[in-house]
Amino acid sequence: MTRDHIPHLAPATRLVASGRPERRPGAPVNPELVLSSTFVAGGDLDYARAGNPTWSAFETTLASLEGDEDTTALAFASGMAAVSAALSLLPHGGRVILPQHCYSGTSALLDTWERQGRAAVTRVDLADLDGLHAALANGTDLVWVESPTNPMLEVCDVAAVVERAHAAGALVVEDNTFNTPLGRRPLDDGVDVVVHSATKYLAGHSDVLLGATVTNDPELAAKLTQQRLLGGAIPGPFETWLTLRGMRTLHLRWERACANAAILADRLRNHARVERVRYPGPGAIIAIEVNGGAEAAMAVEDAVELWLPATSLGGVESMLERRRRHALEPASVPDNLLRLSVGVEDVDDLWLDLDRALSVVTD
Ligand SMILES: *Cc1c(COP(=O)(O)O)cnc(C)c1O
Image 1 (cartoon, helix red, strand yellow):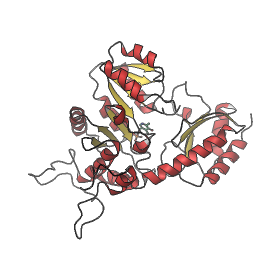
Image 2: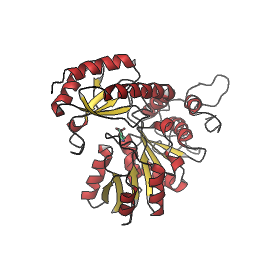
Image 3: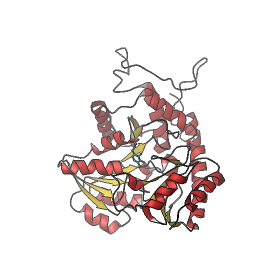
Image 4: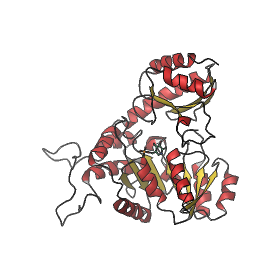
């Protein structure tokens, strides 16, 4: 692999140039899709649960975007596999602070662990630093950060959270899925481990599930590597290859999606059928509360023709869904809340479809 850590390259260039095979006459320009469960003994590669050259191409590219030459990225089978690996850093019975809202899968996994006595969970509004400080006092092992949170889009001052967590001896893990490394680099704020659902913006085409962890700490990297090897939540080479292929255009997709979202958020703020717009920006996720409650929100899901009524986010195609249709989403998420994942279509086409769908709502 070449050109992975040229320090002066901008993120857009890294996305295009990293993780490519060595340049020599006749060599392919793309990383190879290596389909082999084992490798001839005596080399760097051994059994494919430990490593695969296609993973390495993705991992070096992601590491160079989130950090520098000391950064280790690891590919996992899904975002939740990466979340589970990061949570495996907790000691048995360890204490975790979660944001008041966070990705429902992460929250549900920790609730299960709590019922089993494997973890103790405290939910804190991370924007309230005094509240965080008080919660940290009882010996917290790990603070989980999402900023903005899924699906409520609450933001916090991550550097301040890290400072307080580290002073109390807690690790900080940040789920950076909503920002991508183009929107935020958590390691620069002192975050210990970054997790991604690469399923979303990194892969970007709603055709693959993949996850990743990223860290600058060699000890944490070794633990996460061991967890992947023995936990076995490894990605398929083809999924990893597709994700890196998607990442080649991440900067273009991200720029367009964020620009579309900013325009739509402005227009939605002035829409008579919309009670509230959550859009901390910059980013491409908007949450709206529709006038007329859950039924009105469901009517919008039914009425859109261009927007896809579907779960997930971060693809080229715009999607929306009423989050409370999922049993795992807590009651503190309003039942008329629609989460909009803004894609890269023409913004006026998106607006016309959404405006028309909202207009079918009667209150
Ligand atoms: C989707 C998502 C996950 C889970 O990722 P999968 O790839 O679906 O397993 C975790 N965190 C956030 C913020 C997500 O949006």
